[in-house]
Length: 397
Image 1 (cartoon, rainbow, N blue to C red):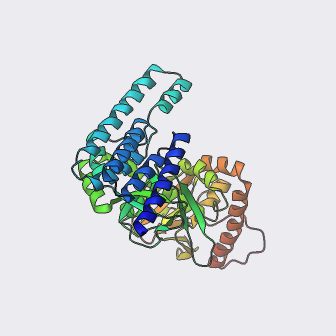
Image 2: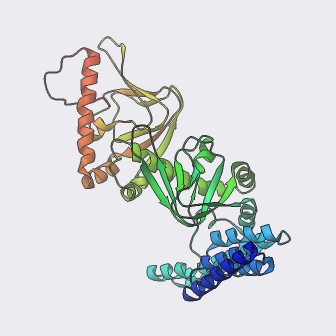
Image 3: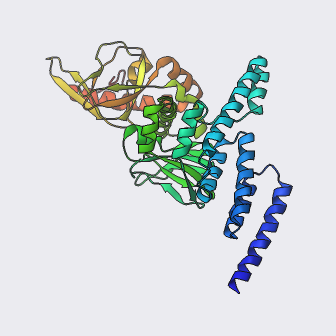
């Protein structure tokens, strides 16, 4: 009796799905759902055929991530299809060559854009890989499914894998004690996340949550390391995105830029450069010319000056998210204090020209800096034993 009930239920669902697929022929995910339902009904051969059609259409239309995800299902049902990823990589490579040849023929800007739209969309991590590299990456990926609002990974957990979205959307956020959630990004199909743990060999820096029923492709850290040893270009692509997201996260919590929207932060990311200083290294020297601002990504630094007798006077210890160097940036005067790394420090640098452009569009940034200027002058005068009777005219660094 139960078997008949489910058979009738599945037949009804199948009829509805096929009707939707006819009405919305561009929605290739409906073809995948038809395959899923056929598999539930025990019609393995028909399910495989539905999946093959979906994979072929995804590939022909340039949706590589989705085609890979469907191929994983095909391999689960039929392990003899060992060359399926190699064939897909070859097809994608041919499409990329065709697009590049078309771009060469269309030399004007509008023509180049049109040529790119005619072919497969560029995909982070995959677009720059050769056929052999791409095929190897495909082999190591595994498919994962998450329901709406399900947590994919949590801030603080070991970062031992990278995820790529094949279907659905993912919200990336950080949630510090006593504070509201800070949204860092909303990722869509083709985007990837989790690269922090890979490069930093550390814990997850943010939480990822599905915003709809979502399908992901996951590659484990140890597998990716083996691929990178063989194909270094994969590491170069990952590092580019790692740098962008490090800066985005840092700016989201910086007193200077936390009021910026996600889009506003994205617009200024390329103005920053990353620098690393070993423990004990001098970052800024009192009396030197100063034309840049620093934000601490990781580590700790100490700002200090000298008394008239040559004694070292500590002014402040600064940690992740803190900034320094703003006084010389604002006034054009030499550095009024020295800064050294107390441990290896990863810093983000912003030069005066780029800062001025940002401040021109966001006057609130200048106001925040001026407030810090007064506070830091007071700290310096206190350290020197000077009573402050007049408004601040110089600052810490």
